[in-house]
Image (cartoon, rainbow, N blue to C red; front, side, top):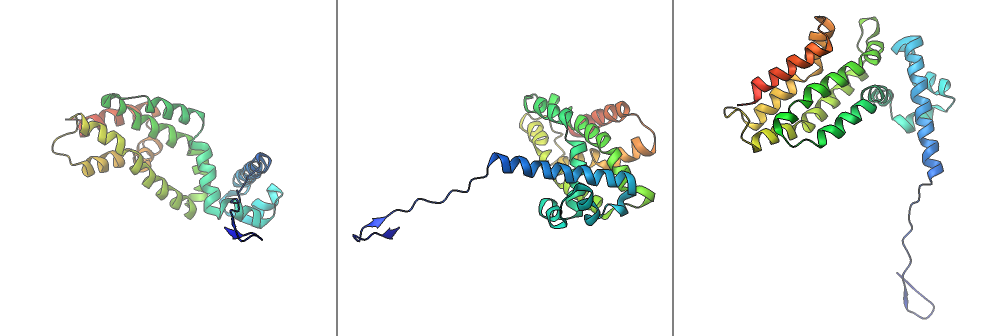
Length: 216
């Protein structure tokens, strides 16, 4: 509000921030170009060669642009893993899970999600674990995703609890811990990647184990 020449208050319209579709598209294209350049470098030179300056040069952008888009090397690693994990098949699985109301049907989805995500990320993870050395950024991203997985799985426990299907001796927090642990990346890695189980064997085992451990 400000005073006009007559002394009356004049309301000044608030300024609206407008993001043009063209600018949004350009930002998306830049993000995609940087991620693709990082992936090529990872394949050609390994994790050590995927430096921010190298990524910027390969993508044809300035170094500050890479930092502005991804924040850090960890941000690039997260983007590469997310591109692998959360594709069309994952989105279809999400859509299917949201339509389910039966708790016993809902408990079928954590094994399907775990298998889908962990199998999809293997190629990128192999590159990040080159020469037997785990990239520190990979560890940080995995920690973040583990926390997100714990939060997202609570709906399964709530559904079992609400319909009196949860084992009576299990508290809600204990049940969440069991579900979170059994669907962990570490269990998948040990059974599938180290012991040679197939994806089908892992998913079937996980499905039966979750029923046995959670359902009363």
